Amino acid sequence: MLAALLRQNPRFDAAVSSPVVSLVETLRQRMSATGGLGVFFDDSRREKLLRAVFDAYYDGTSNDSVVFDTNRTWTAQIPLLATLYPRSRIICCVREIGWIIDSIERLLHKNPLQVSRLFESHPRGSAYERAESLMSENGLIGQSWRTLREAWFGDYANRLIVIPYNRLAADPAEVMARLYQELDEVPFAHDFDNAAYDEPAYDGSLGMPGMHRVRNKVTFQQRPLGIPPDLFERYNAANFWLRSEPNPRGVTIL
Image 1 (cartoon, rainbow, N blue to C red):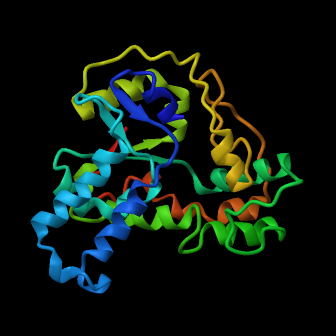
Image 2 (cartoon, rainbow, N blue to C red; image 1 turned 30 degrees about the vertical axis):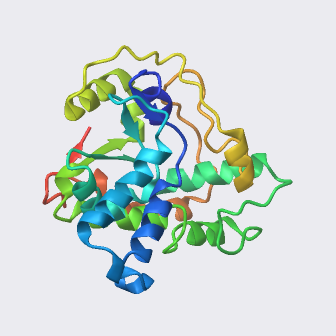
Image 3 (cartoon, one colour; image 1 turned 45 degrees about the vertical axis):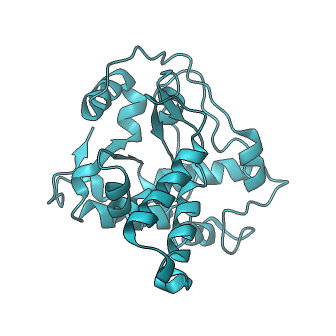
């Protein structure tokens, strides 16, 4: 939803998750001692080659564009980003984990003829088994949750901008105004009644049609819980950004 709003600004480039982080990490490993080619590179050459990946992938953008690369795993690469792009920030969109699980289950129910590849195991099992898969070390939620928590308590926490889903959905004008201020960008008049966005090909490849679909109007809609309440409550403690503490590094929360 945030990407759908950001892309309304002609200076901004934002879309579905890109492969840049995977390309960068693969290249970085090959240029290191573990990749067997480390002897051919010094840090200056490594930096130039890694920046070249960004430059090549976003070659179509103008020189004054701001790129929002929406891969969830950038929080594990903050020191690298700080080196390559000293002015970079990481926007972390968060939502109560129970509601994320609930949303994914609803999508599965809407597509009963398909089997999603989002799950490491038990794609046809119970909601409990699927939740464990999502929260596993490499799961859709678990991986990004772990790297966010690492960044939250780390030395680069001042680069984080956390945006809770409920706040963005309920008051998009206020949240976007504060985001522009944090990014030191010129304010832009977003159209919160026409934020429609969709990625049918990408979602189809995941076996989850509609996963990235954004409806026209940005608004917060109450809905009944669709998963067992004990499953929802199991992950309450994981919503650490909702508590006044611990936030020892003073992470910016909009």
